[in-house]
Amino acid sequence: MIAAIMQPTYLPWIGYFDLIDRCDHFVFLDDAQVLKRSWGVRNRVLGQNGETFLTVPLTGHSQSADCTFINTAVDTNPKWRKTHLSTIQHAYSKAPYFAEVFESLEDLMAAGHQTIGALNKHFIKATAERMGIITPFTESSQLTDVSGAKDEWLLSICRAIDAATYLSAPGSAAYIEKDQEAGAFAGSGVELRYQNFVHPDYPQAGDAFVGFMSVVDLLMNCGYGSALEIIRSGRRPMLTSAALKEVT
Image (cartoon, rainbow, N blue to C red; front, side, top):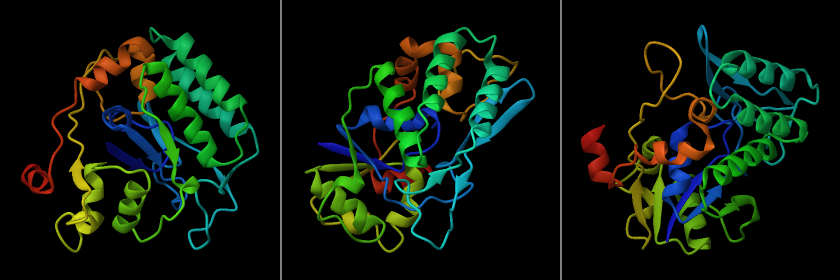
């Protein structure tokens, strides 16, 4: 079984959904620390004047406190939710699939989630389902006998769900393999592999394609029905640690 483990990010990019679709079991790392100005609390949409960041304001957040995705509150003032919807509406009101996608975003904001983890997980799971992704989800906060720091933590999660292979985002290699190749996964019996995803182009307003936006951009331009096929077109064979070093 292939497992992937990621923090629940805000309106993720399309590569996040490739990772979900590529594995057999996806784990939200929801007891990880929330960092301000990270993808956990913000993402980008493409407006008439270029990319625009949407950032979720947090309440009582401190970098030195135990502020995880499951206990970090979002601002209760509804103004930011209205602002995000207004920005998205202004950016995509003329997009082919605006009506159906915007309705789902209105539902998300109306749900009134109190934590950043609940907000992000709602969007990710609902979007994956509407795309046709059938991968089951688990939350790391609900697992027992899970411990360790960084790569050891990831390994313990894989063991808790009986995963034979851990599929990691390439950006995590910096801390997984800081001390040795494959990090804690070396000799553990759990294979380490890296996602290999090439961002595909798709129909988009403007003269030149702009990638790495929130998945909202893909959905607005191509709809839920075509999104998964487009995402899968960017998939390449998984990489070993050695192979990743050759391409980076």
